[in-house]
Length: 250
Image (cartoon, rainbow, N blue to C red; front, side, top):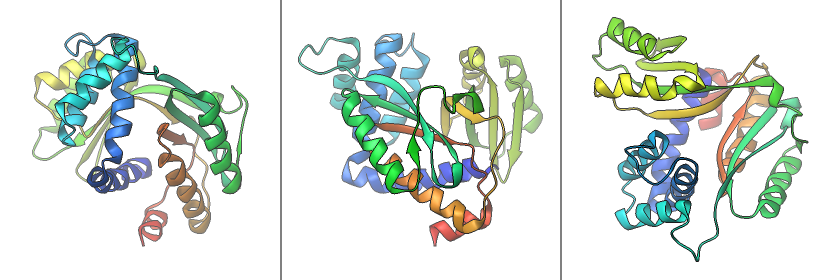
């Protein structure tokens, strides 16, 4: 199980705490709105929207909130500002590359918030293209292995067009070219596999290794970024060790 996946596990635990405050509903609503804007408001015809709605329901997001977010994305809610997807690039402490995925209705606010967090944490916001070359966008799925047949998982993933399947510590990670997202999703859905995470994500072409204390410093900046309402995901080229995660959680 990769360090980034373990970090995702920590985020899910934090997400459960956020759900108590309702904070996660804000983020999910924005993600639903962006998905609806890009692919339409019908989840049967929009896989990304269907997956986001599924996550929203698992977080006990009220049905009316979900419907309102869809209408905001499709433009049916005329009085609401439209969210748009935006990627920002920059560097964290110790030269770690950051790709920051946002859903925003005010780019000026978003840029100001990102710049503040990065600069106060020892990093900086960069120009478009300054770090994007260090990442590749892929279709990504992860779920619990449980008692699932490993050979069957490999077969399903490869039939869907995946080019990598990793199984470690009871967790399955599948990646493939971005055009294969729907076909991989369809193959896994037929087998009634429920995902912990599914979507398009940026993965580093090469990871950067830091000391434990330096890694923890970067993780704290990532956490501050992820706490911003406009931020949906933060991708880095940081190699995250078990020791660093243990120290961070401690």
